[in-house]
Amino acid sequence: MKTSRIAAATVVAGLAVLGVASPALAHVSVQPEGTAAKGGYAVVDFKVPNERDNASTTKLEVTFPTDHPLASAMPEPIDGWKIQVTKATLDKPIELHGKQISEAVSKITWTATGKGVEPGFFQKFPVSVGTLPEDTDELVFKAIQTYSNKEVVRWIEVQEDGAEEPENPAPVLALSAASEDGHHGAGADKASDDSHGSEEKDDAKAAAATTEAADADSSDTTARVLGVVGIVVGAAGVGYGVLAGRRRTTTDA
Image 1 (spheres, rainbow, N blue to C red):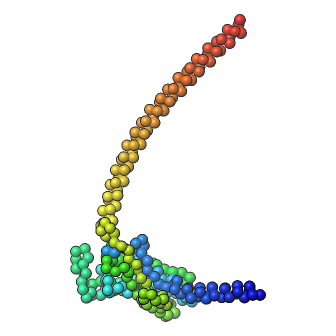
Image 2 (image 1 turned 90 degrees about the horizontal axis):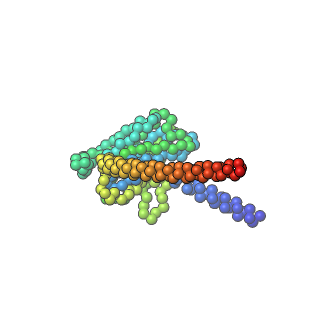
Image 3 (image 1 turned 60 degrees about the horizontal axis):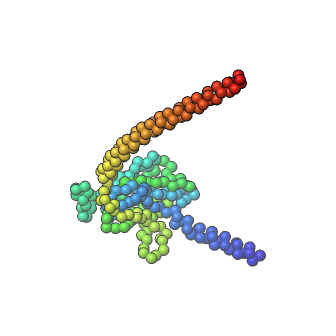
């Protein structure tokens, strides 16, 4: 009886923990596809799960940071969603590719033109961003999620150091250390690809030369082996002929 009570209490406690943890696991989040290095570009995915059983997510609004503005933010087209990019004038212009930029993306809004994110599903909203700041370790993107029943969930609470995770935390993008070679953006990647391509061609030529030499050595070795085998077979034939002759002579005698 005592064992049954302990088991029941354990199950109840486990369900309680799951009940508390579930909302935290299902909040709107942001993650890079690969890495998000300081001073470079990255494609980041805003992941939006549907937390309701009787409504679909039909709208997502993501506010971009103003303390570390991003001069470039280009969303990827998604079937079934209308995308609106809002820009704002910067208090202090920033430099991008040698040019002064006086405005930056302040918000991107995705509005469903179909069913949206239905119950039991999630949706990723990719955005190419850059250049990423070098004077911070993370970027905070506040998000607002709207359901088909008009319910609005504001994922805007900032995590405080040493405090428990808030009920509706804002998506946070962690930034990795800048690349040691200082290459940033598509141009640097292309140059790196071209360099790798040249190295691969040289390696291919060297491999081909090695293969040809190996083939030549193999052919020469094969010829020698066949020659030796021929001599052995010929000698065996001669020996067999001699023995056969001796047997015949003995029989005749």
